[in-house]
Length: 71
Image (tube, rainbow, N blue to C red; front, side):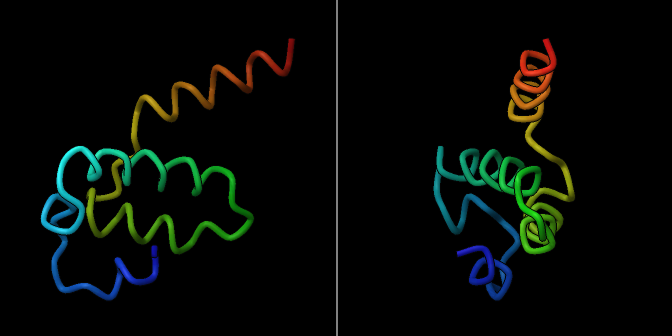
């Protein structure tokens, strides 16, 4: 689905997914980018649809999990 999103002409996630799925897309792409060995396609989706802005709440949860695993 990520590659298909990149092939679309629009860069409006609401036009593609509707609400609230446009928010879920940003969160998922942020998570997948952090987890994937090759995160290129996820980074490209974030660039195209969200001007490169990652989902703050997802990043916060990832950081929290990382801190818990270090303790």
